[in-house]
Length: 410
Image 1 (cartoon, rainbow, N blue to C red):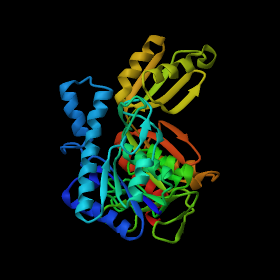
Image 2: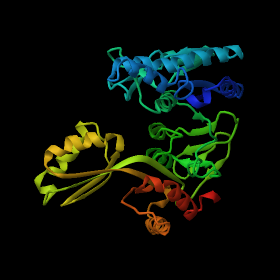
Image 3: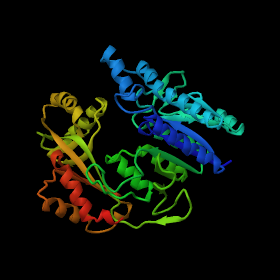
Image 4: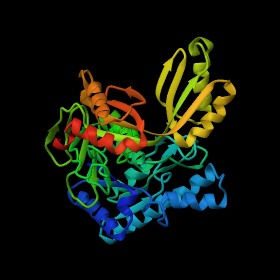
């Protein structure tokens, strides 16, 4: 049995016209001799009746402090509605289909509400339906704990659902359908004519996701990478094309042929609404143990840190600016000089080919300095270089780096 997992995001299901296109993509897959397994998100975006953000607003109107199991139970309804509608749409087109909740298709998770992680999948029901010639339509973004409590997987959780099912079912590929035609070299809102990347490595997609690109959740790329299952990011209104994600710098496209890429920089990503934290006031953070204590306290308060800089007399890092007051409140009792400044953004150049290539950082710094853009912090890995800049400078920074690395020529 040749299985293809097809995930449809909320924006690709927002209207009846878009849903008709999505249904057609599944029918085409079945007619090509594959057995489709469909994963759906809640229909639409904030303001639409069944969207996740709309449901959140609804429960927060009742209780602004709502947390945990009740919230997860409500949020799961958006995807269940979507799965039911989609399954009936396939039935209408002559393709037998059955809607399943996350727990009906066997997805179990830990007990962390609003951000659970999948711990296992009992796939018997899926195999039963596939063996009977029926298409499972799974409500994404959700699962159930061993104790029977409904959980949700956090933002982008339907991507994770699709990736997990792709691995468990040993799918030939996982297709992620959106309202764009693949992953661009830069945010099309800033670079309207940014080309679509035909092929990317898993590492590049993971880095792009963590650095702010929102087309695919990085966890989905990590999960499929473990088993080497190809990913295809496609537009719901086009039968072919998109971005194929595979191992290394080679990836077989979903429609035949092999693409090869050898780029130092693949794309530019950015993440706004950051705040910089600078802590001074100790002669030696390391010997006093205050350095470790700072990060432990922040972790306990649920504050994630990034772009970390440590020296004997200075600790600097970046956080989501929505967490600025929390960070200040938990760090102030330490008696340190804590300065938190909002209004920053992280701009990153991403490319698996930059590892071991000298001069990439020099090009990034020279490029931004040439535009009069100050860099407040940097960090790097084998596949990215990130710079902290003022948020107001993001458009100029992205456009300048796009030109510097000639991303229009990909």
